[in-house]
Amino acid sequence: MTGTARSLAPMAGAWKQAFHLATNGSGSYGKGLKLARNGAVAQIQTQPGRISAPVAAKKATHHAAIHVPELTAAQWDTLAAKLADDPQAVADLVANRIPATIADSGHAGGISIAPPADGITFSCSCPTGRTHRVCDHSAALGHAVAERLAATPSLLLGARGMTARALAAHVRDLVDGADPGPSPQTPTAPCAPPSSTHWPPTAPRSPRRTSTSMPSATSPGATHPSPGPEPRT
Image: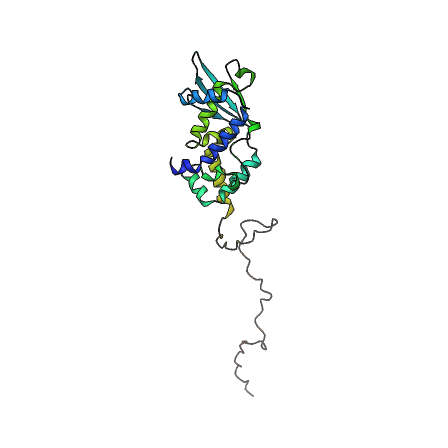
């Protein structure tokens, strides 16, 4: 088992326990385990609220499904906020890995990706499954999910209402918005001209001259004309 699979094992264990309780002691639990070990479960598909797969039986292939409740938007927000505070979780998401943090509800804001036992229901194309009771085929699917969950935790993420890519984008938005860092000094912008003035403004007018007369004799800088010749007597 790889380190990643080992760290995500609690999620697989939580799923297996909830699934076991949901079968309510049915004999199909053991029969389904035998089918799963014999490779009867084909490709598993997920969509919000549903995990499904074709399951090969002796006489036919049946389409089994397990239904789980989706997490609410508020629960996803709580989970994303906890992941955004964990540098290792952010690094895992950036590298397209599922953070091990989500396997432990204690470190995921109390949000468990594994659904509660009373939220798990079953359906199948076989006669028993059409009555929404667990059958050998839906039980085989439940065992197959437990087996593949450690390596592919996105199985439960999608069934609970959010893909791994969407969760990564949500966390990235929180990280980008949480600490924008110091903003650069913004130069003071010139005040906008009042709405009553024309834009662009006209050139300033020259100051009006208050008098066109020459400066008086007493004013500073005034020049005095030279006296003319004295008249003869």
